[in-house]
Image (cartoon, rainbow, N blue to C red; front, side, top):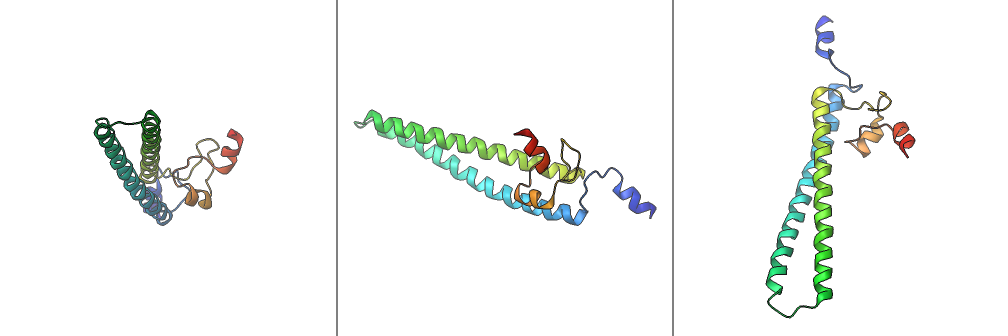
Length: 133
């Protein structure tokens, strides 16, 4: 019994190691998908920039140039948003490693399993999220 208590010393997470592994697997899957999306967005940005320089040699309508610039801007915003999402997922993985995952940073209460399954990087319980609105 003393070894179990010693092992759990420093644990803040209300979830067991088995449950934390379950959440870790969800996060890693989402992170892999986000990495793939980020690579695709990066390729799209690179191609868009190459095409923009190629087309400048030909007669090119200003409206087309504006549309292309707007598309690049939108892609860049998606790229940054995806990069930020990956950082949130990495932070969640650190909380799992530190055994602090699943605790609301506002209320200090357990975040429900359903909420963590839907938004695995969250640090807020539904109660805290609703109060922030």
